[in-house]
Structure formats: structure tokens, C-alpha cells
Image (cartoon, rainbow, N blue to C red; front, side):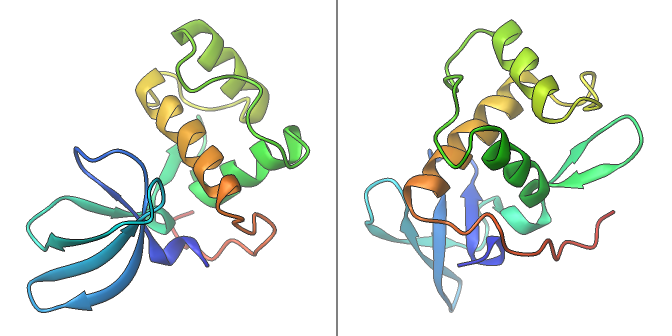
Length: 136
């Protein structure tokens, strides 16, 4: 599965696989508990393939950041907990993406990225797929 089929839903934990678009919304499946839900179109949905991380020079697609984490961790879960203190999160993220823009990437963003990475890893996501995001 690619990031084009994985959603983050505002004010809902975890990630969701897009199962089917339907009239007035989407059928999604939680990656936490595998339960299916219907989400109305008026909810704030974000495709992971459309998310980029600010650096001092450009925006880096989220998949590229996930790949850097995957390489750093040698295919294992993150060595830093998504619930770690702000300083630990930022230090870890600098080791993954040394030029990330710390004025525009908040510790809450880093927490989500690490939690999402761990969820995707647990689900067997292929981090070696090519980056297809054209936001660069």
C-alpha cells in the first residue's frame, strides 16, 4: 500500500487506510484496531502522500522522512518514543533530517511523524518504494 491510500484524520488518533470513497464521505479502516469507519467529507482529512516537512531550503516529502528513519533504525521501531520530551524529539529529528526548520516543525509534528512511522512499520509498510510526491 502506498501513502496515497493512507489518511490522517483531524482529532482522531492513528492512521487510516482508505477503503472506498462513497457518497458524502469515505470508508476507512483504522490501522490501530482494524475497525472500519465512515468519515464524512466535511472532516479534515490529510493524505500522507500530500504532507511535506519544512527544511531550511525546501519541503521534503513525508515518505522521504520515513525512509530516513527506516534507514537510521535499520528497519526497526524508533529508538526514541513519540512521547519523549521535546528536547529528545528534536535531537532525534535533527539526526534524521539535519536541516529541518525548527521554527515551522513543532515537537507535536515530530511526535506524529514518529508515531505514524511506528504504525506503518507494524503494518508492514514498504519504506523502499519510490517517492512520487511532486511538492518539491
